[in-house]
Image 1 (tube, rainbow, N blue to C red):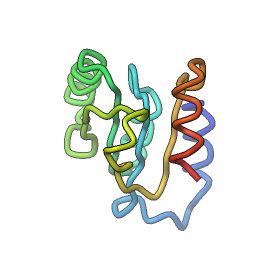
Image 2: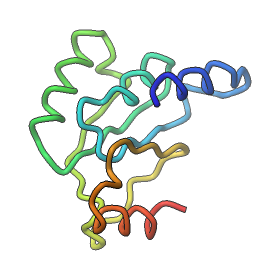
Image 3: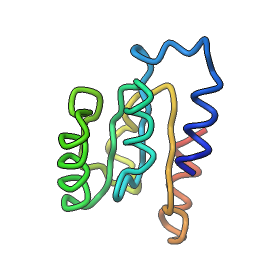
Image 4: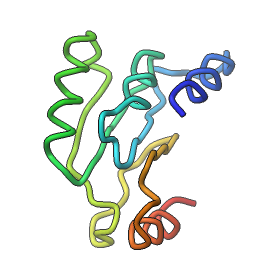
Length: 109
């Protein structure tokens, strides 16, 4: 998925990357988030668990991407919390659970 995102974003020559934000839901290890940050987008990587976000932040620091990438705890199933604003929304491996899949369908249109 990250390779497909990289190919698509690289092909968008008119994309104004510095002003564009990508939201990754259920970031886990953050492969899509790191790819987007490498391509120059601002990235908000979210997960409902703290540990993956800590590891992702450390990886972003090691790769010199900390200014491009932020992490935030976010549970897609908590409908009381609004979806963070972004021009692009990506998610990987979040549809295995029926509850999470339903929340994704209601929130991302």
